[in-house]
Image 1 (cartoon, rainbow, N blue to C red):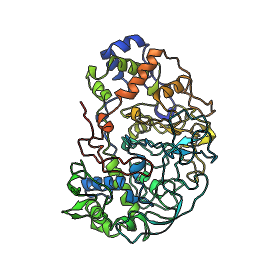
Image 2: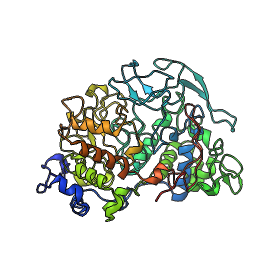
Image 3: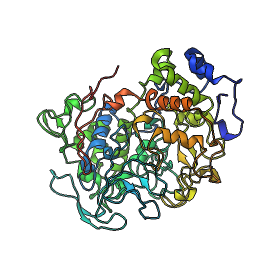
Image 4: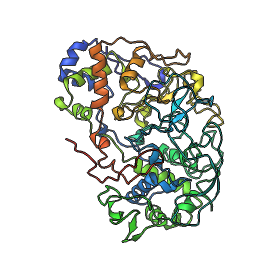
Length: 532
């Protein structure tokens, strides 16, 4: 039986379900399945408008996208001059690094998986350890480096437990930024608010103590951008801020963008500014500065005060760029548009399981296959069927107390992120998109499940922990061997945008060096492979 409306507005009404449909019939009749899917919330992503910020200070959108792409990929944005935003979001928008990528959990004790500096081989994690992303060494900020050719700040390394002499690792698995412009909130717990206040991630919530500089709606990506770059375990040295004479703005504005990284002359965004003879961006054939790029995107009045309001410019520019990363060219999109042969027979059977007995559509709904989007919030309202916040669910990956996530009471802020204040928000995490999920192993907020087969097994047994707060949708389900294989095939292949896999425009990028991985070579708009 197919659940057509798994998450009703306000969480009040029972889901509407059509007459029973035979799974076997759908698995062999592509047109019948397409006709039935057309009655659900699923649709091509190209039909989903990207939420537009309301109240933006950008005056030149193309220039803002160029500035945002430079910000995103530039290792100079970090305290150590080696860690860009992209360092944790380069592989289909996520992170495939394996050396020194284990966080010990909030008990600060490494279990038997892997320790600081070691290589982690993907495996099921059964403790509170989790796969994170390596950031900088634990260090204290002492000042900006006056040498404009240096990407690093002046910082003093202060080793401390649990990583000691090794680089720190974040406490959650890095989610993909591809398609993130459709989300209403960012981060696994939704801490980055849909309202951008111009300063930090908190919007106008009770955790914001900085006041409101601006009120920009539909701008959670701008809110999110202000978080990692001021976090000493992710990008900065402790004590360096975004604004002020010793802030990131004061550092970047006089520097040449991407001066330590090569950019392709065929880059889909930065190609006209690329230096054909070396690293860095050029303006009219001469080394450019971030100051010049800021003024082009925001105008001279904002450029004149950029040091003092750099958080606003940083957030808006990064949102402008990341909102262009739209993975809407998948076999699934072609199938939904009427091309019945875009999916293989096995994938068609997998889709039938997805919308049928698997009821994956309960939460992985809409064009983005997630109920955490702006459009689904507008359709379904603020509450899900459990009574918790729309887009967030406790699914029993780990015990609730391991990480309270949406119901956090103080780890990331002073008041709960939860709007509903429902117990179902305790330990509830954002529903990630399934687009390109085959490229984003390992899975869940802790990176604790190495393969999609493991994920399907997890849902088949109704989760691993029977938390009192667990969503009522997470119940045991029985799949045949062929149904399980078909569902995995659909997830792994039918939802992959080839352009993401091959770094083709708009997913092309500058060169990116790493401290714990081989350098990611520069690509231009043609990427590194062919797409049919």
